[in-house]
Amino acid sequence: MNQTADYEFTIIVPVYNEQDCMPQLGRKLAEYLPASVCKTCVLFVNDGSSDDSLRLIKELCRQNPDFFYLSYPRNSKKSAALKAGFDYVMSEYLGYIDADLQTLPEDFNTLLEYRKEYTLVAGIRMNRQDTWSKKIQSKIGNAFRRSITHDGAIDTGCPLKVIRTANAKRMPFFTGMHRFIQALILLQEGGTAKQIHVPSYARIAGVSKYSVWNRLVGPFLDCMALHWMRRNYINYTVNDTNLEK
Image (cartoon, rainbow, N blue to C red; front, side, top):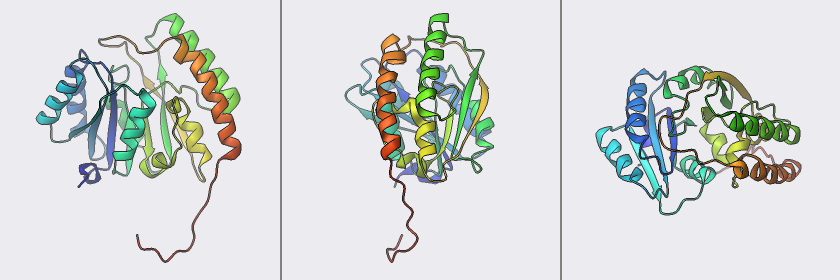
C-alpha cells in the first residue's frame, strides 16, 4: 500500500547534493507536521545525489514515520524529481519545497487555506535574499515567460506550491516543466490558480544549482515548447461509462 494515501497533503522535497541542509531541513519539516492545518507527510526525492544526502534522507525517514523517500541513481534535474513525486503521491493534495529552506514549511498553512477553492495555490517570494544578479535574471526570465504563456504567474521560481494531486498527475512533463506549473494547470479544463506572498530567506547551506543557462537560455527554449503545447493541448470530459472505478 502507498502510505501517502493515508494523508490529505504530501510535501515533495527534491534533493540533489544537499547534505549540509538535511539536518535542519529534517527538523523544520518534523516541527511543521503537527502544526499543519491538515494531515501531512513528506516525500523526499533523491535526484541522484553524489554526496551523503541519501544516507541522511534514510536516517530522517527512520526517525519519523511520516517521512518517505524515492531515489534514483542519476541526476535528472528538478522537473524529473517532481514528476517522480507526482507519480507516487496518492494524497488528495501535494506540494513541494526546496531543500535549501529559502522558503519554510510553516508557510504551507497560508496556502493550504485555499486548497479547496483553487486547483493551484502558489507562493510569491517577498524580500528575496538572492544576489542582485540572480534577481535580475529572474525578473527577465519571468517577464519573458509571461509574455509567452499569459498565465499571470509572478514568481515561477518560488518552490512553495499546493496542487490538487489529480490535476498534477494530468500535467504533461518535460525538462523545465517546474517553471510552467501555473500555465499547465490553467490549460486544464476548470483549472484555477491563486498566488499568495510568502517570506523568503537566505540559503542555509550548500550552493545553488542554477546558472545563467538554466535561468535564461533554458527557459527561453522551454517557452517555445510550451507555446506549441498550448496550441495543441487536448481537453476532454467523460460523462458516461460502464467502467467501474
